[in-house]
Length: 262
Image 1: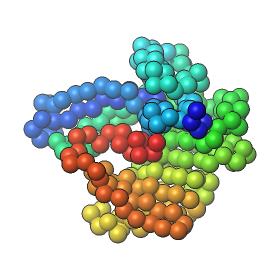
Image 2: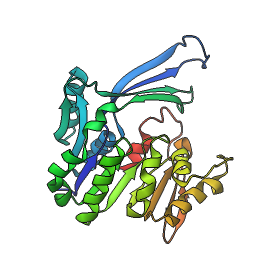
Image 3: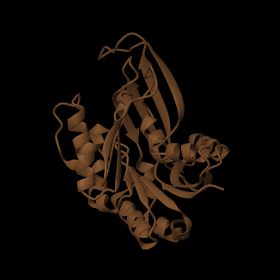
Image 4: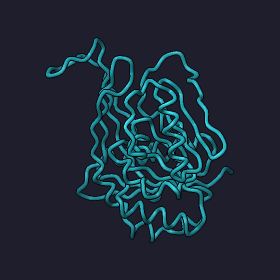
C-alpha cells in the first residue's frame, strides 16, 4: 500500500476549445471542443492514485448529474470520494479554457463558488483525515478561512503540506503560508503573483528561475515551477535547476501542471 495522501480542493468539469485555424475575436471560431473531468485537487488525486498512493479527496460538487458523474469517475480511479460533498442548489464547478492552435492557454473562465462549502467546520469535523495522512495537498480554490484551517491542521499534526495555486487570480491566498509549505507548484504567472514580482521578459530562463529562488527565500522548502511546453524549473535550499520537456509537441497544456504536482 502506498503513502496516504489527503487532498483538499476543487472538483470541476473541464470544457476546452481549440481553434482549428487561428482565433478571430468577436465571432464564432471553428474548433475542436472537448469535455472532461478536472479541478486541480481532483486531477492531482487521480494522478497520485495511478502512481500507487492511497488518496482521499475532500471537495464539493453540486447535487446534479455532472457531480454524480465526476464522483463516479474519480472513484473508478481508486480515489476515496467519501468526503466529496454534494450540495443541493449549487452547480458543480466548471472550468472553460480557450486554447491557442499550439495548445497553450489563451484565456479561461471558472465557476468554483460551490467550493465555499469546504468550510473550516467541515475540515475540523474531519480532522482525523489530517492526522492519519502522510502528506497533505491543497489548491487555491479554497476560501481564505478554509485554507487557514487546512494549514493549521497540517501544522498541528506535523504533516508536510503541498500547494498548487490553481490560477494567478487565486495565488495571493497562499502568500501568508509560504513558510509552511513543503512544496509549491506554480506556473511562471502564478509564481510572479506569489512573489509580487513583475517578470517583464518571460522568455528569459534566468528571470523565471529567479522566481523559484525567491519562493525558497520566502520559506518554501521545495519549488517546482512549470513552464508550459518549455519544461520546468526547480529550487530547494541547496540547489536550483532546469529540466527540459521530454515530448516533441504540445497538444494541450490544460492539467499538465496538476500532473507535475502529483
